[in-house]
Length: 403
Image 1: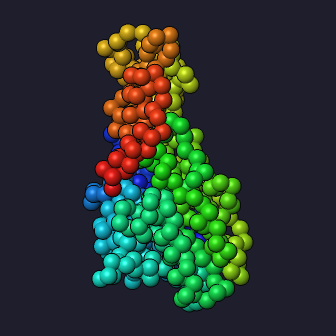
Image 2: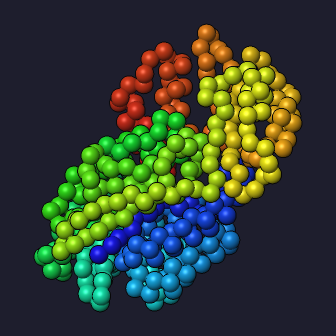
Image 3: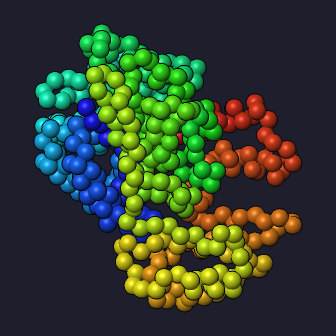
């Protein structure tokens, strides 16, 4: 049985004001071709299908067109999709009655019975090949407060839910059938760029789930979403993030995009292969370290000449300023005339108190983790790190606000 794991599509994202519709369409055309060539039996999408819980009509067209085309071209393909923290769980699940006719299964909401107990059966999806169940999928969407058993922390509650689901699945599946787990979360030991605040957990680590919960003997693979960097978790070969197909920020410009291909044979994991994808548009940051405006303008001359297209690279410029420069933007735009790049952002830097400190732009401000902001303010005011007890209390408050 062949599975393909992907995640964090973020359809509908605008990159510094640029519509990425063509980039997503390019990815989906590549994905359809890959599924056909690799004879994939099941497509696993681990959350953040859309970039917003209220996606545009155009974003939804791209998504549903892909599902229709990929299932038409591959009649035996089964798709399992879980909601991420960027998705509206209810909106994603709403078309289930229609999509299940296409062998597409969406899991966004944790349903409960009239007694308030979690409906575990709804999260179990049998995976078929040649008309027979060859594996079971535990498809868990992004979990919010109330979605998991009562526990002293988010991490323990989520772990308890996975343990409960695995235990209850044993009662309905044949003992020799393998299990595939899906989730949209941050696992302990996972890696995120120091400069990328976009997918950092809201409470500074207390939401991290131990990968030990996925160490059950019959779990052959765990397909995770949420972090945009493709990676194994804590050295576990079979617990992985697929990463996002498009870089979501300049902090992700060196990430390697692609999908994970998993082969299961005789109930055992046979191989995992990384299939690389080259996005339509690349990201360029100039210079490597902030330089004065005159030197930045000089480096712009080395950029390729030509017309700007939907495949043209996005450009980030890092300018070192000793004083305000009102004409900076105009000078940069003039220097970029005739260059085949799209200016995304020109980030000003300045020198303060014998050390460089970054001037936060509006786009960066929108992604700042509130916990990190509080720690920075505390350090600037009191000259020391925030006490652990205060961190814990503030993390709890932030967590409650954002649920």
